[in-house]
Image (cartoon, rainbow, N blue to C red; front, side):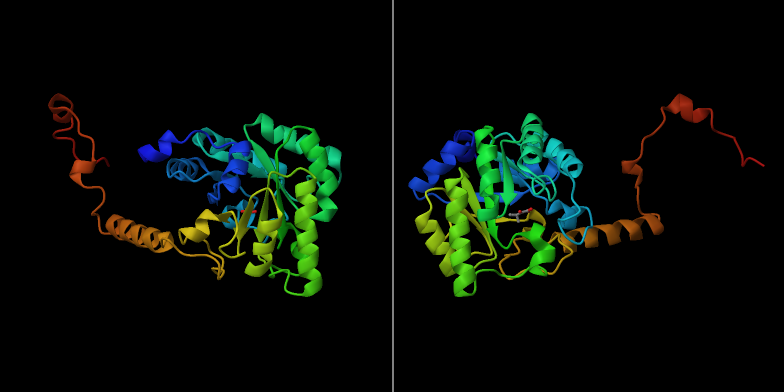
Length: 288
Ligand code: KIV
């Protein structure tokens, strides 16, 4: 880890609030497994999110809707073992809080007991009671408004929100309701830059944007989009920092060719018997 990053202490919820006051941007990425979570943490990213995007990104589902609490727990445990410095946030999956605040608290407490430090909940005004109930139960909550992927069927797909006067006003009200309910940060997904700027100015808590322009207090992306490993079409707001699909494809093709041509493994990549063991094989012909 970069010594400067290492010198910075553990990221906590109060520290993120201070970062907003100081005007320091916050970085966040998704992680679903041990090795990538370790790399993200060591690179000094502030928040690691075990997102329910793991459904489409690594489990092959069409949306986040089928993702279960058991799925989230499985990946949370792997990521927890890797993350030391970043704040570890986990998504409450679809169905774990829409059916009632009791189930929301039970799911969130279960995640905190497995090492999550906060949960993320999608929805604005209609979720404010749930957010309040969770914060009363000592669960730090990150809100998520605008394009909320768990509302896939209601929204009719993944569409930018807040482009009409009415929708923009509704999203601003959502942001204020979630902050008033006690959220320590709010993800703004798929909304116009101008709306995100107003929300950032009006909220005391940090706004973390994804497809919401550069004026948010922080940014979040899905790791696999950023490194070019997603099978889905790349959205406009993703900057591809690497093309890991190409790197992996080329490695896999070379491996297949080397195996079929007998070039892998080489002698140097093989184990050898000591001389006396080798001697006992001498003179053994073909078994008939
Ligand atoms: O599940 C997820 O990855 C998310 C981010 C895109 C914010 O919610």
